[in-house]
Length: 201
Image (cartoon, rainbow, N blue to C red; front, side, top):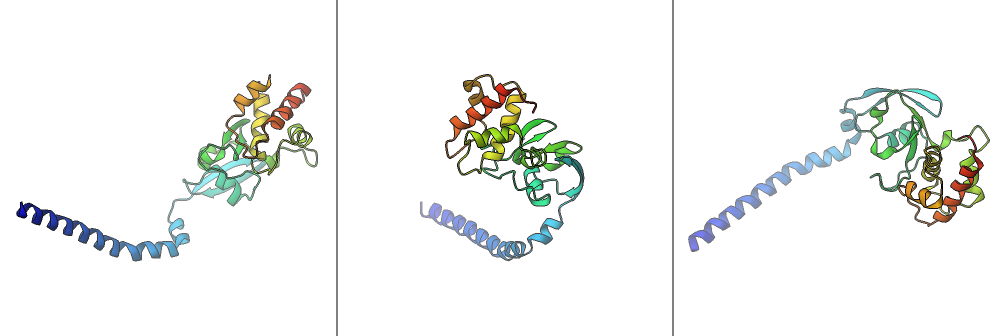
């Protein structure tokens, strides 16, 4: 029994010593890496990317790991598309890709080569608001407004897809967009008005 305890103590000592040595070696490297984030980022391969955003063609160079959301916000400075959960659960980052709604935080930028992207900034026609934007204002379909761009982008597609025939259906097909302020009844009213109006979207 004493021999077993001695062996276990020796193993524990070796494990702890090895872990401590590894931490000692890694710490300066990690610290240095933290101080040189830009140099490390530069090591990632840059890939060419061509896409159209709000009617404007762009020829870009991006890292393969960059999401469409980060590309829109950080490279193209289109801040209307919001970063909420960054996990595809809140819908704040909803944009249209070739006319279909997607969560831009879940799509890598390079996956959208040659595609047409529409963000909330591209929805209006000059100074004239999109019918859905007007309806959201009329029905007060927002409070803090953070989720509103994603709600509007999703609402436009909800109508286009034919999923706005009644309040229950709208709630079902807008369920991917979360409003922490709880403006859901007003959002539903806005969508129903646009649907009933039969306006071209």
